[in-house]
Image (cartoon, one colour):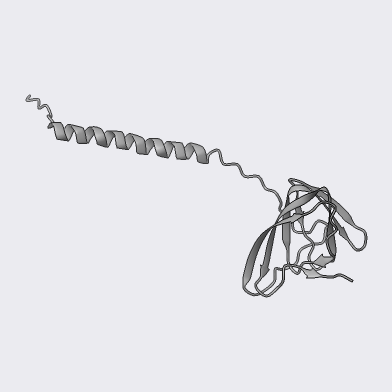
Length: 153
């Protein structure tokens, strides 16, 4: 049998080495990407079919959907005005605390890290504590409706 030895020119050998290095780097990147994606953590913060006071949510408003996300900073010892919301929304307490109250005297206290499932078409207001409050509020309404409706008397 006649054995043949493959011989590469200096240029071909350099190209082969470069291709091997590049392939190794690409594979390392994919392996690293796979490792970091396996470290993703998902923590549900809220899944509800009713507001904080137990009132079931009805249908979302009709029309062109409009998503709004607000960061709301409320000073310490503030009593907000009475208001209502025409569609479901939820607020995440980023810092501080907030007591939500209805006109009938029903209240619920929320602290940093908790989520408020807001009431719909129900008059309420919020009262902050000594540190004030920062909220991230998600509204899922439509382009025709306001985010809230004042009910000051």
